[in-house]
Image 1: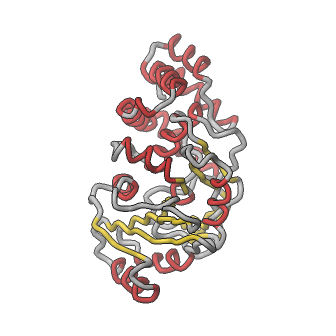
Image 2: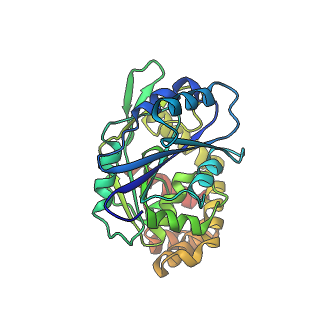
Image 3: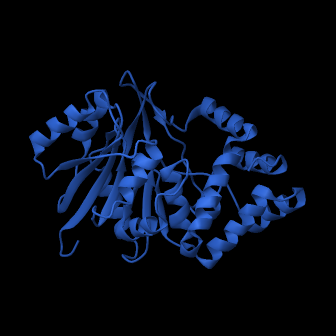
Length: 309
């Protein structure tokens, strides 16, 4: 991690992803002057995933890719196991799904954006995505978010998929210190902790990859009226409230890593989550919480009234 040559670790989690994995691997392009390595954590694949990984290693050399066994408890725990692994060292870290297709300049653009931040400050980059239907036809773009990334927004929603996220070493160290927490989404957790600890978060409005849509996806693309309706139904059904409870518990475990302002915002959010009606409405105002769109902010207000946060 010293000298002029920068290093980048791609953190790829796999589980029965063989049919699209080769295309994803072939699309990973490390920038000029950057030493890259792909670290794979496989959660017990029973298809040809390991054969595809073996073929890639034979073609590119053992220095290009290494494989380890995942914890076998879901994709979030698998990604966090890689992120927190002490033997993986680099200047930058990029999450990688098993079935996307990256733009050729994805990593170069991310590193260029992160280079503008203080090298000692935790910094996280994420972007929009294009949706790629199983038929290989493009199916649209993820929402364009215009409001600035901040902890007051992160407590309400995530703004970028983990498949787009790249972080610097201080951000990774911060997340290592928190450890493999019990949260639903690893990418949302990264946004929460980095922003709550006073780190820099960059949202790139330009898509950086093709996000493949197929029946085996664990998490669907965040686009379109159908997706919005599903999110609203989840909120009304209490799913968001359950997820928020897990996020709050994880942040409380890591509260020494938050800034003073971050701890104050978390306290307001706990009132928004658990308080009486007047407390919730007051916390919504005092905490300055916001979503990225008008419709989502309207939903936030009604979820506050109904105690669904």
